[in-house]
Image (cartoon, rainbow, N blue to C red; front, side, top):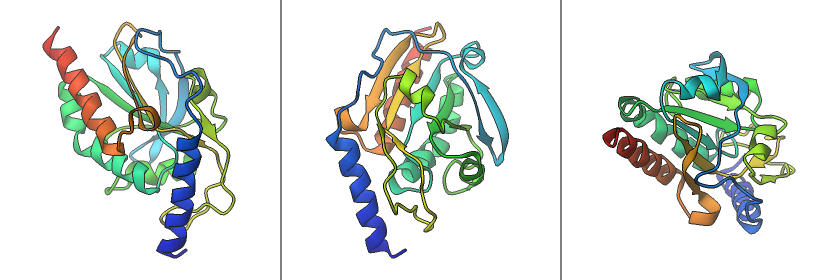
Length: 200
């Protein structure tokens, strides 16, 4: 796939995701729905349970369209780069997409992106995204990632939730609503969890 074709497919994805507003995304003060999901951490199978993670501290749940696409690559790389700061604030990072486990296995271990720093989860039926009120764009015929591999699933909108230990949502960030770049999701989430730590 040429870079021109990739940019065309990526632009189509961005247009589709920006043209349709979020449904009724959960807001600050709402109780975050508990969920469990399978995924990967460092290329190995990983099971995540939100309730269990919250016992350790706040959790940053970030939803993204697909691994190995430009914005998601930047976001994952930035989360990995800043992972130590999230850990120092006592926060857990977890990414969620409609990617299958095979794609997640590669992406989670890729040193250029997740770099084995945090788990990423598979929401192939997008049920988790739907419980959080997020919009899912239908699959785009012929869409391929930066490696030239086809993407056959729908795309969950880029949306980040910062969840406190009591399960309440304390911050939300949306690329559609807030016009944030992928890396801004990371820095804004980090500022929130660091502030939460400072106010203990």
